[in-house]
Amino acid sequence: MEMDRLELLRQDCLACRECPLCRTRHNVVFGVGDPNSELMFIGEGPGENEDLQGEPFVGAAGRLLDDMLEMIDLRRSQVYIANVVKCRPPQNRDPLGEEQAACRHWLDAQREIIRPKLIVCLGRIAAMAVIRPDFRITRDHGQWEDIDGARAMAMYHPAALLRDPSKRPETFVDLRTLRAEARRVCEHLYQKKETEVIV
Ligand code: URA
Image (cartoon, rainbow, N blue to C red; front, side):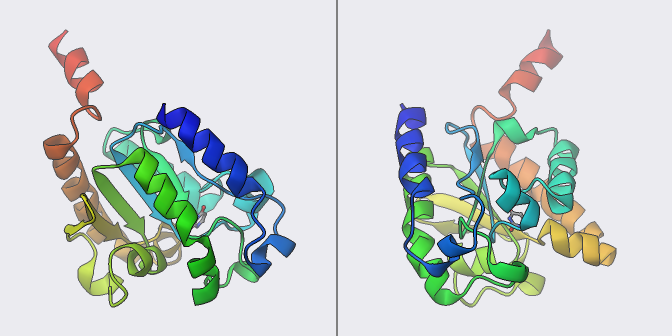
């Protein structure tokens, strides 16, 4: 059911021409993963690899995101991954306020269909867009906040961790916080693994 609604939304989104980023994109990067997942990751916007492949987090930052998921015993296919803007900003600049505003309804609709219990914002731009405009990533990462029926937190963006490995220990702590919260509030995410252990 969510699958059908999400697929219809994706088809509409692929045809979007609501902001100037549509002129320079190769592909709309809608989102990927399990439409029934209780856990959603939200990044900033597609980079070069994502623009070329039409899938979020497939470049170096994406490989690190996969490693981060593995550290908490999750795979990409078990979560849903989307971005604040669906088209690549030229030269990977930050998406402009008006681009984010034009794109916002796609992310809101994704959240409405998927209804994740937990949302993890990757980086400052996503945290400011989704959690609150005055979010400060160095100060506020790793802290859960309640937003419109979900619990949300932000971690450093994987690209920031690639640029500055000194941020990694803080991210390990945030990942442990995420796993603990997911075990507490998500009924399905770790279910299979627990069954496997029992068997
Ligand atoms: N960075 C993001 O924020 N999103 C992607 O999809 C890739 C890199």
